[in-house]
Length: 124
Image 1: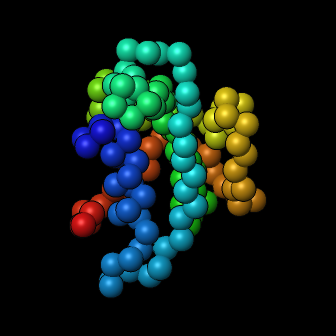
Image 2 (image 1 turned 180 degrees about the vertical axis):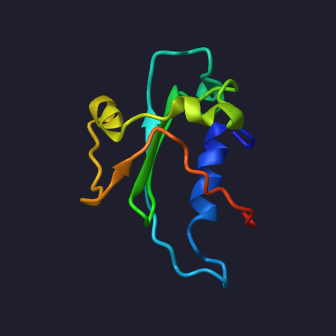
Image 3 (image 1 turned 90 degrees about the horizontal axis):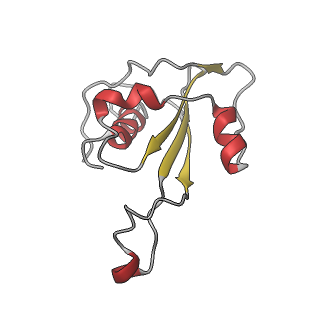
């Protein structure tokens, strides 16, 4: 997923950590995981590694300003960077599917609009 929707969420995370010298140290809360499914068409690593491929990836990011984005992204080539907003969900939907709950701040603002905070940064 070098150029897809998941990579986009990684860029959002990395480029908003505030580790550049000219920025204050910005704190993010980030949770992520997989959702296993029954789709065997993408299980490319059973023979070589004995591992099935997750059908979906999920991520929740709470930014220092209280805004929260959450995604459930199909683990396939259709999940493009340009369509990342199509996979935005409410965090409680991830909780319902996975059973994992999130410790969001009291002032969290859940948004189904992707953050526009992807600024140029080095991912090296």
